[in-house]
Image 1 (cartoon, rainbow, N blue to C red):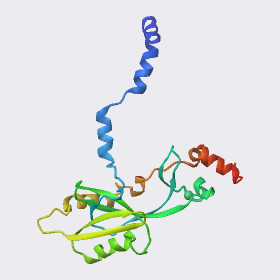
Image 2: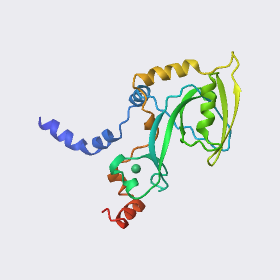
Image 3: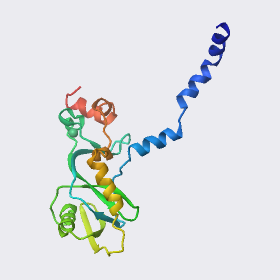
Image 4: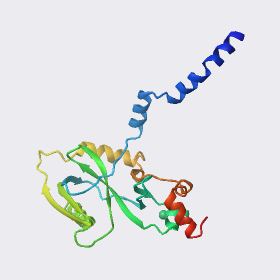
Length: 205
Ligand SMILES: [Zn+2]
């Protein structure tokens, strides 16, 4: 007993540090397989090939946060949302799963509800209504989306295996599409300098 005590007190320091930093790579691998991570498809000046395969999307409200601590879109926190309180613009996005034939996986395409000329939604709808397996090549310049399409030949991979698996997983509740955007709690948002100062100016703190 005596021996044990003296031994543990002797090793207490380094042992604690060791435990804190311990990471089992196999456990990481397991958690990755258990919850397949979905990624947002970012469109820009380089052409991106996409194959729409479903009209089922999920609607989310997001805010863009340019603050260096965040620098991305984050999910709106609902009725008590700090970002809504400070008048940060709220955008609605339809999150649509599409197949990415170059990467061979499903990605999540954020689409606005706009039907203005060159908006993305009406151009995707045209393809989905057409009913044929089509690949779309998309270039984005601000709010203007240039889309060209090509019909897929019979021997070309339209990702049926991958998309079928995705739909099965989605229907069994495995995929939370909204999780492609981070959720940051109100308390945490309110600690960020610019947001905190805006809250104070608007009399919220
Ligand atoms: Zn909000």
